[in-house]
Structures are given as C-alpha cells and as structure tokens.
Image 1 (cartoon, one colour):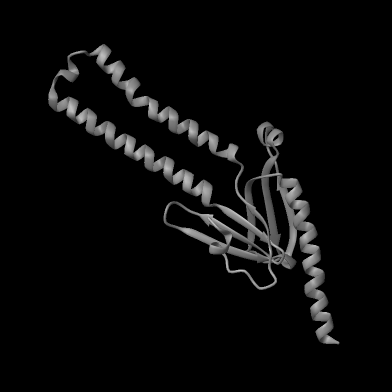
Image 2 (cartoon, rainbow, N blue to C red; image 1 turned 90 degrees about the vertical axis):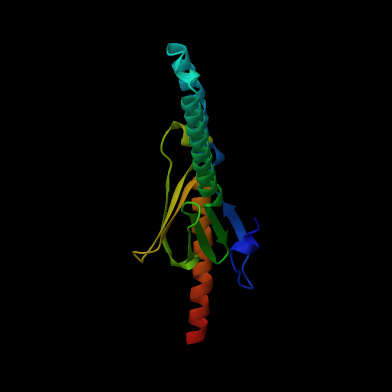
Length: 185
C-alpha cells in the first residue's frame, strides 16, 4: 500500500516516517488463533474416545462437521479482522503534520491529522519487560485542544520517535511563527 494513496500531500511536504505497530504485538493474537484452531480436533478425539458410539449416527456426525466448519470460518474471520486492524493502523509523520489512520474493524476507518507546530507535549510509555527488551511502546502527542490527541500504539523505538517529533515540532514552530512575524512587519 502506497502512502501517496492514503494522504494528499502538500507541495512542500515530505513523508519522513510511516509507522506501524511492532510485529511482536501481533504474536498473542497468532497464538490465540492457533490454540483455538487446535481445540475442535482435541474435543472430537476426547468425545469419540469416551463415547465411541456417539458419532455412529449419521445425523449427529453431519451436525458435528457443520458445527466445526462454522467454528473454523468464524475463527478465520476473527483472525482476518485482527490482522486488518493490526496492519492498517498507520501513523504518517511528514515535515508539516502527523496523520493518524486508525482502522476500526473491517469496514470503519478514522483519519486524524495534526500540524506539528500545534504539539504541546509528547510522552512515551513503555511498560513491561518485553516492550523494554524489544524497544517498543506508546507515543502520546498532546495539543492545547481537548479533542486532538494522537497516540502511536506499540511503535518500535518510541523514545527515538519522541525525540524526532520534538525536533520536528520546534522546526515547524519556527517556520510558522517566522512567516507570521514577517507578514506583520
């Protein structure tokens, strides 16, 4: 997926970062899916071992196959939805603004943008041994406005990104305030 298809860049704008969640954060969903996929054969084996005559009836066997098929299709849909949400949550940092593209389920997406010079505070949050070891965490960007706060969830190198955003914010603030000062004179 090209970034150019997601946002409409201004003439002077350059994309500096395209951020996604750390791949390690998807591992719990992957493990859960594998465990849930292994459950029906185990349950089938246990029932057929304890009650060997139960699946001799064709109608009950057909219902078991139908139920298992519905279960696996639902599991596939769950996994696909979780992957789409994981993969399509994107944060784009340019030299002028931050674009937050948040995928909510399969058919809903929210896009927010924030100009860099409006940033008031940037905080990182790295909790736990695994995020500390693999260097990923949340980057929270706050503005003076109550309704525009952007959070980069589980991004790699959160501290470095925070430092870069502070630098970019200062540079953009100088640029914008420099233009307003020149126009007033």
